Length: 284
Ligand SMILES: NC(=O)C1=CN([C@@H]2O[C@H](COP(=O)(O)OP(=O)(O)OC[C@H]3O[C@@H](n4cnc5c(N)ncnc54)[C@H](OP(=O)(O)O)[C@@H]3O)[C@@H](O)[C@H]2O)C=CC1
Ligand SMILES: Cc1cn([C@H]2C[C@H](O)[C@@H](COP(=O)(O)OP(=O)(O)O[C@H]3O[C@@H](C)C(=O)[C@@H](O)[C@H]3O)O2)c(=O)[nH]c1=O
Image (tube, rainbow, N blue to C red; front, side, top):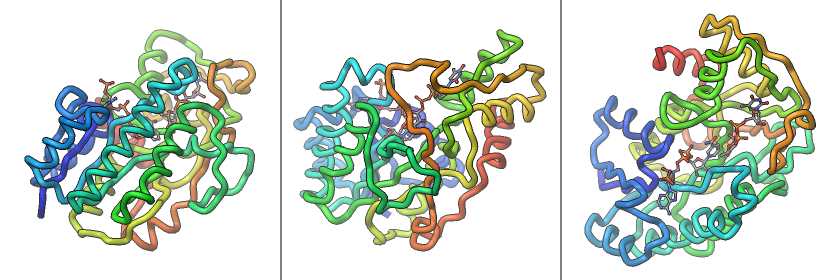
């Protein structure tokens, strides 16, 4: 197997990839932090591609601060769109496969049926918009790409909802959590395993896919499950989004249909509750 360059290697998904690769003895991955592989620096990117001649490139680098993006539009766009364009161009020139990660926030979330890859996108905020732009720059440059849209990523690494809940739950008796946003949490370790599976199997089923854990839940039910599984007495109170004002509006319903990924990529997808229990065990 060839070499895989992992950009954004120090972020949540990057660290999950490192763990899964270590556990599977998966060789050939080169993890690059922002300083080692800045996706906005074309000169250093070119040097990296020339030195390593990668067969695959996984882009975990992104601007992920959903609310802050509303005030940092240009920076978010440079990282989420221009950075992806830089990688896609170099992948095309070096005949490498690009694995790009996108988000459920490309959808407006006004429906109530699981979203497929062909459903219309309509981002509600700058983060979702710039991630969608990042999806759109790829196909004109290369055919050899996988775009995996995922949602509500969490893990034992970096900052995420599960870790925030455990921290707040240890400090407060009661937490008020939104229940009118419905989606599917995704254990970033499962997504990492899926990405490595695509490389290991040398999959050529290129294209756009939805990948989250199975099932659906609200943030309120997710938080309640975290405390139940952890055996914490923290009370959770369901509130509406209007009672928890944020700068960026989130989709109310962003459950994604994974039929295409299951049919074409040969991946088994665990239920979110099973994976949550696994993550909490790891966090112990
Ligand atoms: N987190 C989530 O809930 C979800 C995430 N996604 C997508 O999944 C992917 C991985 O997300 P996740 O790991 O959680 O995000 P993180 O924010 O944990 O990681 C992103 C990483 O990208 C790095 N980065 C930022 N700018 C650059 C740059 N110019 N060049 C290289 N690296 C850079 C960041 O470094 P630094 O921190 O130093 O700035 C950070 O380490 C992203 O594409 C994200 O949009 C999709 C759905 C849900
Ligand atoms: C801390 C807290 C959050 N919430 C709500 C706010 C929000 O709607 C929801 C999740 O909050 P967070 O800020 O953790 O997550 P958020 O930034 O909305 O998460 C998103 O991140 C980007 C990167 C994605 O791509 C999305 O898939 C999604 O995971 O929980 C409460 O209701 N009560 C609370 O006490």
